[in-house]
Amino acid sequence: MSSSLLSNRLTRRFERVSHLGTHLKFKVKEQLVYPLQDWRRTLQSHPTEIINQKEICIVGMRRSGNHAVLNWIRAQQPGDTCLLNNVAAGTNPYRYKSDNLLRYHPEHYKQAEVYRRQANGELVKRDCLIYSYEDWSLAQIVQPRFERNRELYIGKSSKQFDLLVLRDPFNLFASRLKQNFVATKTKNLPMVEMWLEYAKEFVAESRYLKRRRVCVNYNRWFADVDYRRALAAQLEMPFSDAGLNTISAFGGGSSFDGTGDRKGQARSASALDVTNRWRQFEDDPNFRQLFDSDELWHYSTHIFGELPGTDNLRT
Image (cartoon, rainbow, N blue to C red; front, top):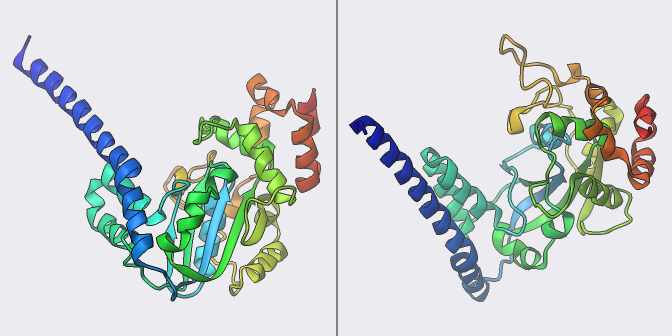
């Protein structure tokens, strides 16, 4: 065996061992160290002052337009706004972002340290804190441990909003198939079941989200300026429609169009045909079988109306 080949093999083995060591280190922290830290902090502190003038929790399935809505809110919300995108259910959002940067992007150690200090209680007063969940069941998002520690993690808020984003299942599932996002991150709910869980919350058949709940019909949000104006009023922010025509880079942008054209130029979000994505998969048997559910058709029609042509998927 040549010395270069031996060196390459040893390097790969070291990287594997190093990765396992890093993974184990974070697992120990998550399961042992952090719960102990939280318990000690509950004994030592009882938050009373307002940290966040406004707190917005955004919930949605991946490829539902979460990032488009989030970008729009952030662009219009005045004052000092902090965004914690795509955090894990049941965790301290600041701690999760700190660990995630150190684990996967160690070059951003300075930002990780900023998050770590806030995770340890050095919270920064802000006009608005926004944090989002993607592909988590609602039961996991509002699990009792997190609800008990919410103010410990992010501080007291003067106003709290739970914002649920829902997209029609035809274009949502097509976008997820395009990006191979069929399985959910939580591993415990198939994609169709998770959409149904969100749809039932949307029509208030369930009540997982306890704070001022704002439900966003992504199809209407994208197409109707009056709908967006009413949404801004619900969120108590001035309406300017800033941020509407920016395709967010979070999550790779649009599943079908990315974040720009072939020359790298930013595209207007309004130029995207977001209600006809499903037509690229209408002859795909794997796609068609996702709609073999009377319950799904019931909620889709109730929330989004009948989308032209989709009735062909019934057969």
